Length: 68
Image (cartoon, rainbow, N blue to C red; front, side, top):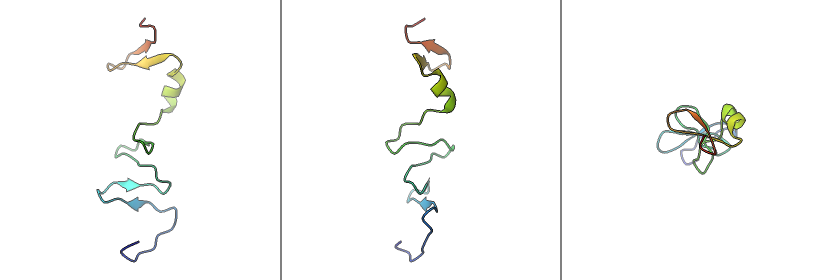
């Protein structure tokens, strides 16, 4: 590192904008939700259960893919 400090491999790096980046390169948002490197949010455990043919609308109602 440029400032002469050595860190262990599993330590979190401090990014220039003040957000922390975990050691495996995945960025973590401020509210603790993991994000993939591309920036889209990973599916939570509950969403994985509901993901078969259902989508969530903005008002948090689960809606079938066929519109019913």
